[in-house]
Image (tube, rainbow, N blue to C red):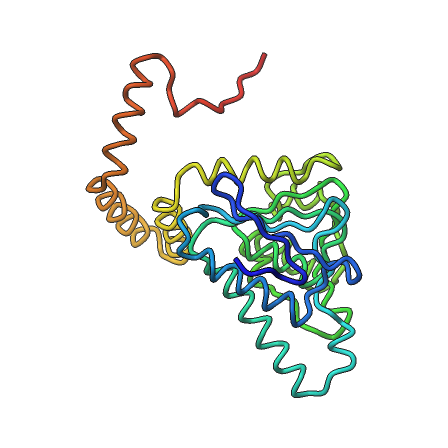
Length: 265
């Protein structure tokens, strides 16, 4: 992969790590960072070394939203081009053909929160704050991404007020899936991403496709579609390989189904 100016990339056990790295702007998304993330995702789309992507900043901040200095100083044509570039980025993340995890620390205002919402799963540090702050700048927040996570009522409160919520409130309403202690965000989110990546690139693409499509279907259409996917999987070599391995482990008293289960002491 090409070297980037504001993005640090590497692959770790099937996880493509995209680390936003523009400390002078607290990882705010300007022209270059938009383009670099799109390019990185494009490179990993059909790379079998990557089965899951982790978006992360650092333990202090994730992404401080759009570069408002650009919006404040450019002309109308520049603002339109910047908006078009933002759309391209959001589509690249949301439609990426494999699962994605966002790891959020510090303040994630406006577009920073929206980028996390475009990912499949969000993990938050206890120091994280989320807010649909665009309203405070007379801009539109991304309501659909909010609503798909937290439902209409919570989404509209965030969307209308622009006021932030902390990590534990974000967990309560379903905006994030997990809250980690400060300083453990990278290790905990990378562990989750590696667990997802264990499925491998073939299944990663299939299951991401199901997640994107089935959520927009009625229940009967989704049921038929998902059974069609199952029928396809039953014909694949990966099914024959894994069902045999799983059955051998089951006979040995070591079920793969509960290998990471936590039981009360």
